[in-house]
Image (cartoon, rainbow, N blue to C red; front, side):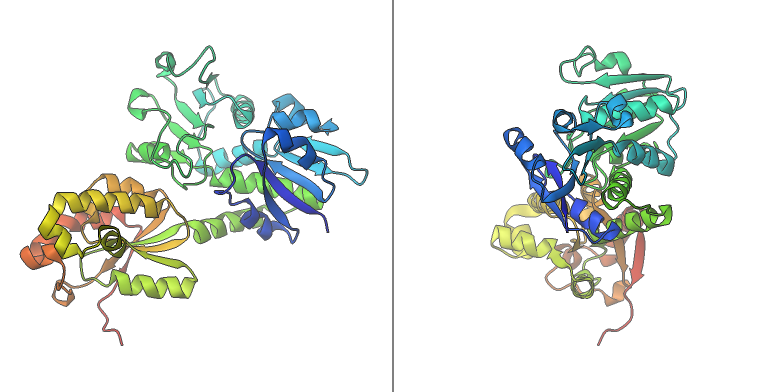
Length: 396
């Protein structure tokens, strides 16, 4: 059986093998390669085809024996298929993927001024979709072009922003290529990055009630179209929707918040065992890093120090995917932690009656009345969480 692969420079973050395993039974590998090794890899007849990602979507075109009219018109190839004679044909399935993303996110671009950040292979595809969907104007911002980050202020009136750069992509989470406060007319934001699920750019848009979407839908949709070419068969749209849901379910962290002593650690351990996932306890990780217990940290270094370390450990842990994570009760005290948790997480509020909370070894619970702590935090717990679990039943 022929195998397939993803060609790119850095691929440790890729979901592509997982996605393709859901569309077909063919072997699928990650093929990290330098530009010098690109031609040899493409000529390896053990592969029946490839997907192509940053930074090679334009580069691979010169190695293709044939390029589809659609891909040639766009100027970017992200899928290559080898025929029985060994000839390589380049296709562009990113167009279908980005078009699906806009439809799913219900972001309207007709008659809008759109700014596209980046000028690589993904950018030219995005530009084509935006123009075909009737955008009034499409401006490309690059590091050295006529429109660049030094003069981007000329385009602060743009209504749609699309990021095609790797800024904010794992492991560089928490960065954004632009400040949305500068774009007063912004009506929609799309980031083609899919890991993290919500980049800082997307989270910033959500905070401002601007319709926004990350790139997971685009990734899965283009993979569906590529898989159809690999297998020479049609895949139903319903299957696409199912795979998108499955990938989200399998990759997003389950993050538990709630009052100290609510049972986050015990429930988290049980959830992780049931789901076959790794469990991470933020307080435990802090204790291991600092070499002392949480009460000792509070006593010797103070709460402000603890909160800073808590954010650092939280950021490192939540940048990963597919974990069950138990947080400390006071994690909601710092606004920055919201974005850290939401980037890759489904947030679950563990509720427990105050008279059932354990307070031993919990510095604030032992010095501040629980009622006061709860009043200070309950609104944040409610706002941060996607749903809650009632943990008032006695456990055996």
